[in-house]
Image 1 (tube, rainbow, N blue to C red):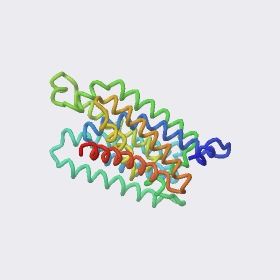
Image 2 (cartoon, helix red, strand yellow):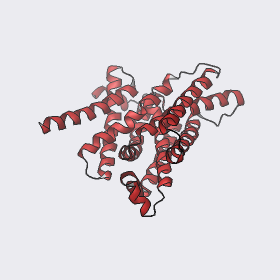
Image 3 (cartoon, rainbow, N blue to C red):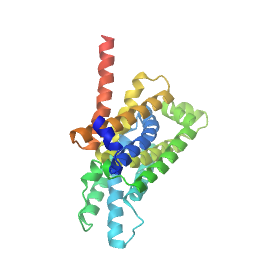
Length: 280
């Protein structure tokens, strides 16, 4: 830990500070939206959105090279694709007569397949592993600004619609009878989930993003009596996972994304074991 702290204050280790700031900035968003998702039991839907993101990243890289659209960054491609996937999955979930799990599975694999094809057809070497498993150490100042803006949007909308979201998450039928447009708020929650996923893809990657999205919230739920307490606990646990995971990855030469997720999983298991021992 001391080695990590010394590295953080080293003037030449800017990338490490950017990585830490990115993780800490993203933590409130996935603490708040992750708590809504866990309460609404929408983890599977969030997983499908996360895996569709690779299609947007691959498509953006392809368009940059083949059509000269330099403004179409992988982050922008990820945002557009994630929101589109959220709306499609949300509408299917709410209105379609098709088997929802089949449609979600199809969108899940199509997004991944499209991303791999686009990346394969883009000239030059592009490492898909950095998107699948994250590379927080490659965060730039521009990425940090983008994460901050998305963070403000997600947190602002999440807190603005807090009471209605609670009603939709815990008693959708009651919310509908009270005149709340439950479909609108379900779609809003999925769109906020999509933006939060994009925030975290650079931190832990597409494959492990759902773990970091749900584990802090699930852990916090065991010692929270209100949703705002769960959000606060999830945010603090997320920050601890990012800071601790980065420290472990630096000290032990481990992949940063995997170290962050492992620490979040350790906190969750620790709480489960603690509750089990207490009940005995």
